[in-house]
Structure formats: C-alpha cells, structure tokens
Length: 106
Image (cartoon, rainbow, N blue to C red; front, side):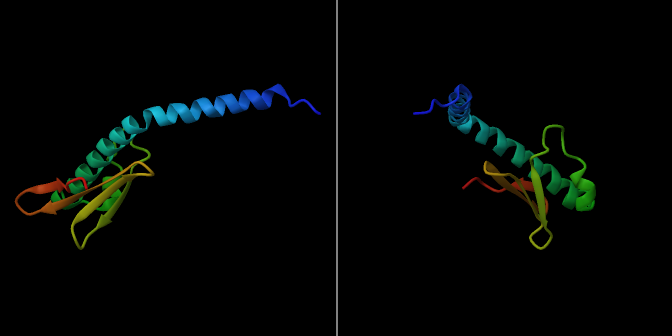
C-alpha cells in the first residue's frame, strides 16, 4: 500500500475550507451583488435615457469595484439590465416624468 503525499491532504483541507467560507458568506455576497447591480442599472439607465448619452460612454462611468457588473441596453423598452454573474441581476426602466426606476425584485 502506497502512502499518499501529505500535500494532497493539505490541498483537500484548503479546498474544504474555501467551500465552507463561500457557503457561509453566500447570502451576504448575493446582497452586495444585488446592490451593485441595482446601482449600475439605475445610473446607466439615467446616463443613457435621461442624459441621452451613448451606451459606450455610459459604461465608462462605473464606480471602482464594479468590474464584475455587466451592462446591457434595450432601446426598445428603454431599459438597462445590470448583472453580476451567478449572484444578481437588476433592471432599470425609463419612465417619462419619473426618470429611471428599478424594477421590483421578483
């Protein structure tokens, strides 16, 4: 019977600790991602439909730390969707007289 190297056990322990840490912080990470996605959607919608700027110009207005937020524009419905992969997605729509409002969370 061959003995397994100690580094395999150490690697397994580190991987298990990372999974436990991720599971423990999952709800907090989702909440922060939802706030970031909502902020990105609302600000970009205002930039796009209130200020009348192009989407390429608005994408440069991201705050530091929002590198994982992706933005997509739907000119037909005058809305912007912002999402953080695997965690959150929010949509803001332009309404005449009201500006850009976030859609309710499902």
